[in-house]
Image 1 (spheres, rainbow, N blue to C red):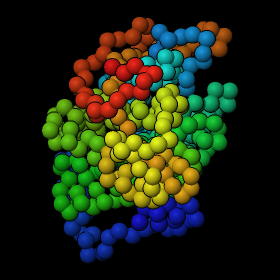
Image 2 (cartoon, rainbow, N blue to C red; image 1 turned 180 degrees about the vertical axis):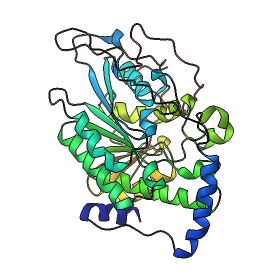
Image 3 (spheres, one colour; image 1 turned 90 degrees about the vertical axis):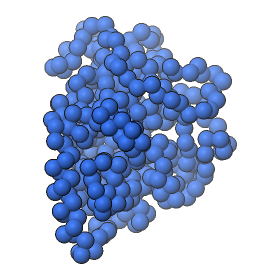
Image 4 (tube, one colour; image 1 turned 90 degrees about the horizontal axis):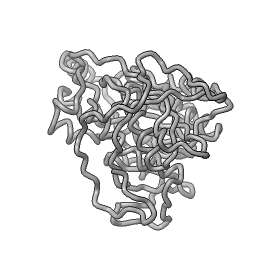
Length: 366
Protein backbone atom coordinates (compact mmCIF):
# COMPACT_ATOMS: atom_id res chain seq x y z
CA UNK A 1 0.00 0.00 0.00
CA UNK A 2 2.81 2.42 0.84
CA UNK A 3 4.44 1.72 -2.54
CA UNK A 4 1.13 2.37 -4.30
CA UNK A 5 0.72 5.67 -2.45
CA UNK A 6 4.28 6.74 -3.28
CA UNK A 7 3.83 5.72 -6.92
CA UNK A 8 0.57 7.64 -7.09
CA UNK A 9 2.32 10.68 -5.67
CA UNK A 10 5.13 10.42 -8.22
CA UNK A 11 2.95 9.81 -11.26
CA UNK A 12 -0.11 11.86 -10.39
CA UNK A 13 -2.37 9.09 -9.11
CA UNK A 14 -5.45 9.76 -7.05
CA UNK A 15 -6.35 8.89 -3.49
CA UNK A 16 -5.99 5.35 -2.16
CA UNK A 17 -9.28 4.25 -0.60
CA UNK A 18 -9.07 2.56 2.81
CA UNK A 19 -12.65 2.19 4.02
CA UNK A 20 -15.93 0.80 2.83
CA UNK A 21 -18.97 3.04 3.00
CA UNK A 22 -20.56 0.87 5.70
CA UNK A 23 -17.98 1.97 8.28
CA UNK A 24 -18.34 5.70 7.72
CA UNK A 25 -21.24 6.25 10.14
CA UNK A 26 -19.55 4.45 13.03
CA UNK A 27 -16.27 6.26 12.47
CA UNK A 28 -17.88 9.69 12.29
CA UNK A 29 -19.51 9.06 15.67
CA UNK A 30 -16.13 8.03 17.10
CA UNK A 31 -14.53 11.16 15.68
CA UNK A 32 -17.05 13.41 17.42
CA UNK A 33 -16.50 11.58 20.72
CA UNK A 34 -12.73 11.92 20.42
CA UNK A 35 -12.98 15.64 19.67
CA UNK A 36 -14.82 16.17 22.96
CA UNK A 37 -12.03 14.56 24.95
CA UNK A 38 -8.89 15.53 23.00
CA UNK A 39 -7.75 19.13 22.90
CA UNK A 40 -9.99 20.20 25.77
CA UNK A 41 -7.36 22.59 27.09
CA UNK A 42 -5.59 25.48 25.43
CA UNK A 43 -2.06 25.09 24.08
CA UNK A 44 0.11 28.21 24.37
CA UNK A 45 1.45 29.79 21.19
CA UNK A 46 4.82 28.17 20.40
CA UNK A 47 7.70 30.35 21.63
CA UNK A 48 10.18 31.53 19.03
CA UNK A 49 13.40 29.55 19.34
CA UNK A 50 15.24 31.14 16.43
CA UNK A 51 18.77 32.20 17.22
CA UNK A 52 22.27 30.91 17.85
CA UNK A 53 23.06 27.95 20.10
CA UNK A 54 26.44 26.78 21.37
CA UNK A 55 28.02 30.23 21.44
CA UNK A 56 30.74 28.83 23.70
CA UNK A 57 32.06 26.91 20.67
CA UNK A 58 32.59 30.05 18.58
CA UNK A 59 35.75 29.81 16.52
CA UNK A 60 37.05 30.14 12.99
CA UNK A 61 34.51 27.65 11.59
CA UNK A 62 31.21 29.03 10.31
CA UNK A 63 28.14 28.17 12.42
CA UNK A 64 26.03 25.29 11.18
CA UNK A 65 22.63 26.35 9.86
CA UNK A 66 19.65 24.23 10.93
CA UNK A 67 16.17 24.67 9.48
CA UNK A 68 12.97 23.20 10.94
CA UNK A 69 9.78 22.77 8.94
CA UNK A 70 6.42 21.15 9.56
CA UNK A 71 3.42 21.38 11.85
CA UNK A 72 2.77 22.05 15.53
CA UNK A 73 5.09 19.23 16.58
CA UNK A 74 8.00 20.90 14.80
CA UNK A 75 6.96 24.32 16.09
CA UNK A 76 6.82 23.08 19.69
CA UNK A 77 3.22 23.93 20.49
CA UNK A 78 2.35 23.06 24.05
CA UNK A 79 5.46 24.40 25.82
CA UNK A 80 6.16 27.91 27.10
CA UNK A 81 9.95 28.21 26.94
CA UNK A 82 12.01 28.42 23.76
CA UNK A 83 14.56 25.99 25.19
CA UNK A 84 11.89 23.29 25.48
CA UNK A 85 10.97 23.23 21.77
CA UNK A 86 12.26 20.48 19.45
CA UNK A 87 14.23 23.04 17.44
CA UNK A 88 16.10 24.33 20.49
CA UNK A 89 16.77 20.80 21.76
CA UNK A 90 18.11 19.66 18.38
CA UNK A 91 20.20 22.83 17.91
CA UNK A 92 21.72 22.47 21.39
CA UNK A 93 22.49 18.79 20.79
CA UNK A 94 23.97 19.45 17.36
CA UNK A 95 26.19 22.21 18.77
CA UNK A 96 27.43 19.91 21.54
CA UNK A 97 28.32 17.09 19.14
CA UNK A 98 29.86 19.27 16.41
CA UNK A 99 31.50 21.69 18.86
CA UNK A 100 30.36 24.51 16.61
CA UNK A 101 27.66 27.16 17.03
CA UNK A 102 24.33 26.35 15.38
CA UNK A 103 21.98 28.96 13.89
CA UNK A 104 18.36 27.77 14.08
CA UNK A 105 15.51 29.00 11.93
CA UNK A 106 12.12 27.43 12.51
CA UNK A 107 9.43 28.10 9.90
CA UNK A 108 7.02 25.39 11.09
CA UNK A 109 3.39 26.41 11.47
CA UNK A 110 0.88 24.90 13.94
CA UNK A 111 -1.95 23.27 12.06
CA UNK A 112 0.10 23.00 8.87
CA UNK A 113 -0.47 20.20 6.41
CA UNK A 114 1.94 18.95 3.80
CA UNK A 115 0.68 21.42 1.20
CA UNK A 116 2.12 24.24 3.38
CA UNK A 117 5.66 22.93 2.92
CA UNK A 118 6.05 24.80 -0.35
CA UNK A 119 5.61 28.12 1.48
CA UNK A 120 7.88 27.06 4.32
CA UNK A 121 10.67 25.94 1.99
CA UNK A 122 10.44 29.26 0.12
CA UNK A 123 10.83 31.14 3.41
CA UNK A 124 13.83 29.05 4.38
CA UNK A 125 15.55 29.45 1.00
CA UNK A 126 14.74 33.15 0.56
CA UNK A 127 18.23 34.16 1.71
CA UNK A 128 20.33 32.61 -1.06
CA UNK A 129 23.55 33.73 0.63
CA UNK A 130 22.89 31.53 3.70
CA UNK A 131 21.18 28.27 2.66
CA UNK A 132 20.67 25.77 5.50
CA UNK A 133 23.19 22.99 6.00
CA UNK A 134 20.55 20.57 7.24
CA UNK A 135 16.77 20.62 7.61
CA UNK A 136 14.39 18.60 9.77
CA UNK A 137 10.78 18.14 8.62
CA UNK A 138 8.02 16.86 10.92
CA UNK A 139 4.67 16.59 9.12
CA UNK A 140 1.71 14.30 8.56
CA UNK A 141 -0.60 14.27 11.58
CA UNK A 142 -2.86 17.04 10.26
CA UNK A 143 -3.02 15.36 6.86
CA UNK A 144 -4.56 12.32 8.55
CA UNK A 145 -7.00 14.23 10.74
CA UNK A 146 -8.13 16.40 7.81
CA UNK A 147 -8.39 13.38 5.49
CA UNK A 148 -5.97 14.77 2.91
CA UNK A 149 -5.36 12.17 0.15
CA UNK A 150 -2.17 10.32 0.98
CA UNK A 151 -0.85 10.69 -2.56
CA UNK A 152 -1.20 14.47 -2.30
CA UNK A 153 0.56 14.53 1.08
CA UNK A 154 3.50 12.50 -0.17
CA UNK A 155 3.75 14.53 -3.37
CA UNK A 156 4.06 17.77 -1.39
CA UNK A 157 6.66 16.26 0.94
CA UNK A 158 8.84 14.82 -1.82
CA UNK A 159 8.75 18.15 -3.66
CA UNK A 160 9.95 19.91 -0.48
CA UNK A 161 12.75 17.38 0.06
CA UNK A 162 13.84 17.72 -3.57
CA UNK A 163 13.97 21.53 -3.36
CA UNK A 164 16.01 21.45 -0.17
CA UNK A 165 18.41 18.84 -1.54
CA UNK A 166 18.82 20.85 -4.74
CA UNK A 167 19.75 23.87 -2.60
CA UNK A 168 22.51 21.79 -0.99
CA UNK A 169 20.86 20.98 2.35
CA UNK A 170 20.78 17.58 3.98
CA UNK A 171 17.25 16.53 4.95
CA UNK A 172 15.91 14.42 7.83
CA UNK A 173 12.17 13.69 7.88
CA UNK A 174 10.35 12.71 11.07
CA UNK A 175 7.50 10.72 9.57
CA UNK A 176 3.84 10.83 10.58
CA UNK A 177 3.29 9.86 14.23
CA UNK A 178 0.96 7.03 15.16
CA UNK A 179 -2.32 8.76 16.02
CA UNK A 180 -3.63 5.49 17.42
CA UNK A 181 -1.58 6.12 20.58
CA UNK A 182 -3.84 8.98 21.70
CA UNK A 183 -5.79 7.48 24.59
CA UNK A 184 -9.19 9.22 24.15
CA UNK A 185 -9.47 7.71 20.65
CA UNK A 186 -11.52 4.52 20.89
CA UNK A 187 -11.99 1.52 18.63
CA UNK A 188 -12.53 1.19 15.74
CA UNK A 189 -11.25 4.72 15.14
CA UNK A 190 -8.03 3.88 17.04
CA UNK A 191 -7.36 0.97 14.66
CA UNK A 192 -8.09 3.12 11.63
CA UNK A 193 -5.92 6.00 12.88
CA UNK A 194 -3.02 3.61 13.45
CA UNK A 195 -3.40 1.98 10.05
CA UNK A 196 -3.66 5.24 8.11
CA UNK A 197 -0.82 6.87 10.08
CA UNK A 198 1.54 3.95 9.44
CA UNK A 199 0.67 3.77 5.75
CA UNK A 200 1.35 7.48 5.35
CA UNK A 201 4.61 7.21 7.33
CA UNK A 202 5.80 4.35 5.12
CA UNK A 203 4.89 6.24 1.95
CA UNK A 204 6.65 9.35 3.27
CA UNK A 205 9.76 7.24 3.84
CA UNK A 206 9.74 5.89 0.29
CA UNK A 207 9.30 9.36 -1.24
CA UNK A 208 11.89 11.05 0.98
CA UNK A 209 14.58 8.38 0.58
CA UNK A 210 14.15 8.38 -3.19
CA UNK A 211 14.83 12.15 -3.15
CA UNK A 212 18.05 11.74 -1.14
CA UNK A 213 16.73 12.39 2.36
CA UNK A 214 16.79 10.24 5.50
CA UNK A 215 13.81 9.43 7.66
CA UNK A 216 13.23 8.67 11.34
CA UNK A 217 9.96 7.00 12.24
CA UNK A 218 8.23 8.77 15.11
CA UNK A 219 5.38 6.25 15.06
CA UNK A 220 4.31 5.26 18.56
CA UNK A 221 7.58 6.57 20.00
CA UNK A 222 5.69 8.34 22.77
CA UNK A 223 3.08 5.63 23.19
CA UNK A 224 4.67 3.86 26.21
CA UNK A 225 5.55 7.20 27.81
CA UNK A 226 2.03 8.57 27.29
CA UNK A 227 0.51 5.42 28.76
CA UNK A 228 2.80 5.43 31.81
CA UNK A 229 2.91 9.19 32.43
CA UNK A 230 -0.03 10.86 30.66
CA UNK A 231 0.05 13.90 32.96
CA UNK A 232 3.75 14.48 32.24
CA UNK A 233 3.91 13.68 28.52
CA UNK A 234 0.74 15.46 27.37
CA UNK A 235 0.65 19.23 27.14
CA UNK A 236 -2.07 21.54 28.53
CA UNK A 237 -4.45 20.76 25.64
CA UNK A 238 -4.26 16.96 26.21
CA UNK A 239 -3.07 16.52 22.64
CA UNK A 240 0.37 18.03 22.03
CA UNK A 241 3.43 16.65 23.81
CA UNK A 242 4.80 18.31 26.92
CA UNK A 243 8.44 19.37 27.32
CA UNK A 244 9.32 15.82 28.35
CA UNK A 245 7.53 14.44 25.30
CA UNK A 246 9.37 16.74 22.91
CA UNK A 247 12.67 15.77 24.54
CA UNK A 248 11.90 12.10 23.90
CA UNK A 249 11.19 12.77 20.22
CA UNK A 250 14.25 15.02 19.78
CA UNK A 251 16.47 12.36 21.35
CA UNK A 252 15.39 9.92 18.61
CA UNK A 253 16.05 12.39 15.76
CA UNK A 254 19.40 13.77 16.99
CA UNK A 255 21.58 10.74 16.06
CA UNK A 256 20.37 10.81 12.45
CA UNK A 257 20.76 14.59 12.33
CA UNK A 258 24.41 14.24 13.38
CA UNK A 259 25.07 11.27 11.12
CA UNK A 260 23.78 13.01 8.01
CA UNK A 261 26.35 15.77 8.60
CA UNK A 262 29.16 13.24 9.03
CA UNK A 263 29.84 14.20 12.63
CA UNK A 264 30.90 10.66 13.48
CA UNK A 265 31.96 7.82 11.18
CA UNK A 266 29.43 5.31 9.90
CA UNK A 267 30.34 1.72 9.21
CA UNK A 268 29.23 0.26 5.90
CA UNK A 269 28.88 -3.15 7.52
CA UNK A 270 25.56 -4.20 9.01
CA UNK A 271 25.52 -4.19 12.80
CA UNK A 272 23.34 -6.99 14.13
CA UNK A 273 23.58 -5.64 17.67
CA UNK A 274 21.76 -2.50 16.54
CA UNK A 275 19.31 -4.33 14.30
CA UNK A 276 20.60 -2.94 11.01
CA UNK A 277 19.38 -4.50 7.78
CA UNK A 278 19.48 -3.92 4.04
CA UNK A 279 16.03 -4.20 2.46
CA UNK A 280 14.15 -3.01 -0.61
CA UNK A 281 13.00 0.56 0.01
CA UNK A 282 9.29 -0.32 0.33
CA UNK A 283 9.96 -3.12 2.81
CA UNK A 284 12.33 -0.96 4.83
CA UNK A 285 9.69 1.78 4.95
CA UNK A 286 7.01 -0.65 6.11
CA UNK A 287 9.26 -2.09 8.80
CA UNK A 288 10.28 1.37 10.03
CA UNK A 289 6.63 2.45 10.32
CA UNK A 290 6.06 -0.43 12.76
CA UNK A 291 9.00 0.42 15.03
CA UNK A 292 9.50 3.97 16.23
CA UNK A 293 12.96 5.49 16.21
CA UNK A 294 14.07 3.55 13.13
CA UNK A 295 16.18 5.34 10.52
CA UNK A 296 15.93 4.60 6.80
CA UNK A 297 18.74 5.73 4.52
CA UNK A 298 18.91 5.26 0.77
CA UNK A 299 21.57 2.85 -0.42
CA UNK A 300 22.12 1.53 -3.92
CA UNK A 301 18.71 1.55 -5.63
CA UNK A 302 16.34 -0.09 -4.98
CA UNK A 303 17.83 -0.91 -1.56
CA UNK A 304 17.72 1.04 1.68
CA UNK A 305 19.54 0.68 4.99
CA UNK A 306 17.29 0.14 7.99
CA UNK A 307 19.00 1.06 11.25
CA UNK A 308 18.10 1.37 14.93
CA UNK A 309 20.44 4.09 16.13
CA UNK A 310 21.36 4.54 19.74
CA UNK A 311 19.38 7.40 21.22
CA UNK A 312 21.60 10.21 22.41
CA UNK A 313 21.05 11.93 25.71
CA UNK A 314 20.36 15.58 25.11
CA UNK A 315 22.59 18.28 26.62
CA UNK A 316 21.14 20.89 28.92
CA UNK A 317 18.69 22.99 26.94
CA UNK A 318 19.57 26.64 26.45
CA UNK A 319 17.71 29.69 25.26
CA UNK A 320 18.68 31.19 21.89
CA UNK A 321 21.14 34.04 21.46
CA UNK A 322 20.53 36.68 18.79
CA UNK A 323 22.30 35.91 15.54
CA UNK A 324 24.85 38.61 14.65
CA UNK A 325 24.53 40.32 11.32
CA UNK A 326 27.44 39.88 8.86
CA UNK A 327 28.87 43.30 9.84
CA UNK A 328 28.98 42.27 13.49
CA UNK A 329 25.94 44.10 14.89
CA UNK A 330 23.52 41.89 16.83
CA UNK A 331 20.19 41.27 15.18
CA UNK A 332 17.01 41.77 17.19
CA UNK A 333 15.34 38.63 18.45
CA UNK A 334 11.71 37.90 17.58
CA UNK A 335 9.18 39.10 20.10
CA UNK A 336 9.18 37.01 23.22
CA UNK A 337 12.67 35.58 22.71
CA UNK A 338 15.07 36.20 25.59
CA UNK A 339 18.50 37.68 25.11
CA UNK A 340 21.57 37.44 27.26
CA UNK A 341 23.31 34.46 28.78
CA UNK A 342 21.80 30.98 28.48
CA UNK A 343 19.15 30.13 31.00
CA UNK A 344 19.40 27.07 33.18
CA UNK A 345 17.86 23.84 31.91
CA UNK A 346 14.21 23.14 32.63
CA UNK A 347 13.15 20.13 34.61
CA UNK A 348 13.40 17.25 32.18
CA UNK A 349 13.15 13.49 32.08
CA UNK A 350 15.86 11.07 33.02
CA UNK A 351 16.23 9.38 29.66
CA UNK A 352 17.72 5.92 29.42
CA UNK A 353 19.99 5.23 26.47
CA UNK A 354 20.10 1.98 24.54
CA UNK A 355 23.02 -0.24 25.55
CA UNK A 356 25.61 0.13 22.82
CA UNK A 357 29.23 1.11 22.43
CA UNK A 358 30.18 4.70 21.77
CA UNK A 359 32.31 5.47 18.71
CA UNK A 360 35.95 5.35 19.75
CA UNK A 361 36.69 8.91 18.75
CA UNK A 362 33.59 10.58 20.10
CA UNK A 363 32.87 11.20 23.80
CA UNK A 364 29.36 10.54 25.05
CA UNK A 365 26.91 13.41 24.82
CA UNK A 366 25.56 13.69 28.35
